Length: 436
Image (tube, rainbow, N blue to C red; front, side, top):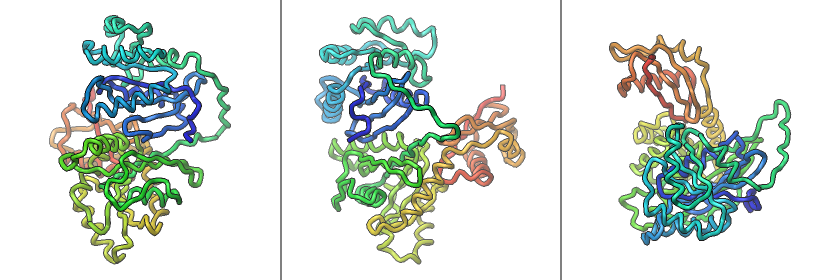
């Protein structure tokens, strides 16, 4: 039974692409009060648990709703959203404040009013006081409470949650002991093509039969997640559906699984790309690895079914992987057999190392001692470097102009950063800004 069972639930609904996932992330990250999150409850809902002003609640991010659309994916999303709405204590109807009200918005508003539950209309993308006047038009949808927010810039979230959690029971939050570090769950998405052993790997890590295992490709359609604590560290492993190339995915339900698997990569900290040792690295593996790279997730390449090959082939196999995944040269490779439960300790060590790299922050002084060693394009100059964020490590180069760096120069700088500071297993993001 989920640990959030029995808590009041806030459900976020809205048309596609209005910023629901961004708002969800803003809420569960509010004041670092995340106490747990669950991915893969269904194919189109993600749930989390958060605390606002001492009120603990569950929040559900639904898929984009298009009322009265008979196509399979929109109809399935609407069906699953209705399941969430039935258990909602409060509904947040999110709408794009920079666009006009559409017929779909009005249909969705009418559907929500019929539920007879408290609804707050959140007008998103209102990121400056001058834009707040835009919210007046949205009162025409018939909701008494209309709140301007900017999910991306975390504006108006407190005001929205004051309304949404009004009447929720308050709890006394335990005082933190001096020097005590709050346990943060490391989210790990297990990704890969169908039938490479993702569910078997999850079961091996857990030591129990948690996910359905079958030799039939594509058995896992919904994502499965499981928590475990090892040596005081908490992990959440998410076994995603096998990702096929879109052109080869004929069934609409499988297309939806591809969309959701990509979404779970986005929600994870670390991705384990599982490869089939008996088949060797193929183009489809590189495509899936590209999804994790694009989302800025830390990555481990996991060669499964290694029991089927001779250990003397390891160097040759590793060279083939590096040739296939040139853009993932930072990702460590782990050889294991999930079926025989061999190599799991080495995998957990790499996950921990990637997590440390993913969160590594380099002092500005150390970064700027590296600047004289960097070779730049003719006429370009770096004045100084800062690291504003982690997960993934992101560096801002203040230069003579904001013109993007040549690919080879960017590659050179990233390589120097890795040589000096490590960062194994995580992508590095560079941003260029003009000094003035």
